[in-house]
Amino acid sequence: MDDSPPDLERFIAQALEHLPVAFAEQLGSVAIVVDEEPTPELLASVGAPGLLGLYQGVPRTRWGADGTPVPSKITLFRGPLTRANPDPIRLARAVEDTLFHEIAHHFGIDDARLRELRLGE
Image (cartoon, rainbow, N blue to C red; front, side, top):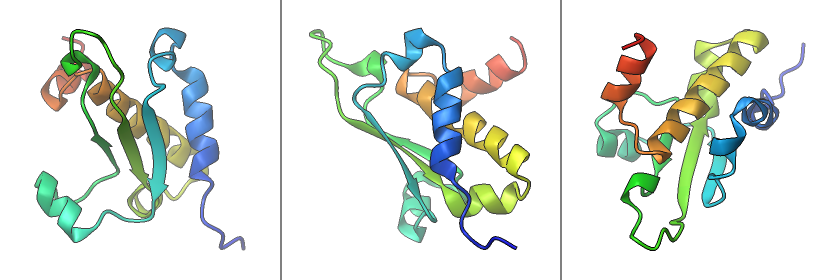
């Protein structure tokens, strides 16, 4: 049995291949990283009991008038993702869903609007 951690970086690369070009072209200032676990301090700072991913930065909708890119970061958390999705196919889908969710935050879409979009409203 292979005890090595799942290759989330490969799943991220695959997910980015499915991202429409118009969005992918606007991710230049966004670092996408993988951390093992969110810290208790991080969870407390966002008021969440757990996290699969996190966007930190300034959404594009809030950039200044000159449109200057502002460095942002998307973090995916390996531990929570792999515990919730032990099957590799499910994990790949969860990585894509989580990554796209965080990318939506980069474009100024909040959680309430994401829920509406998922419900087809």
